[in-house]
Length: 88
Image (cartoon, rainbow, N blue to C red; front, side, top):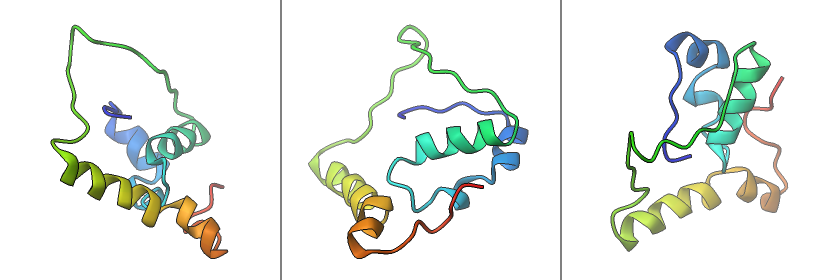
């Protein structure tokens, strides 16, 4: 997701970014981990409260997509490797 808001305690209980670094959809993976560790999640729209831009320009977009496709679960599946951090 473009914007994720978590309490620090929930983030720490879920294992933080190192546990989802290799995931192509790290936002979904952290939500799964937050729920698995007893936290709550929700998807909300807040167009009047914030505005986000995923990438500024094609260069940033390509770097972001490369991270998602090159370093995440998709690339691992193509290479026949298991995910770096399986969910418990």
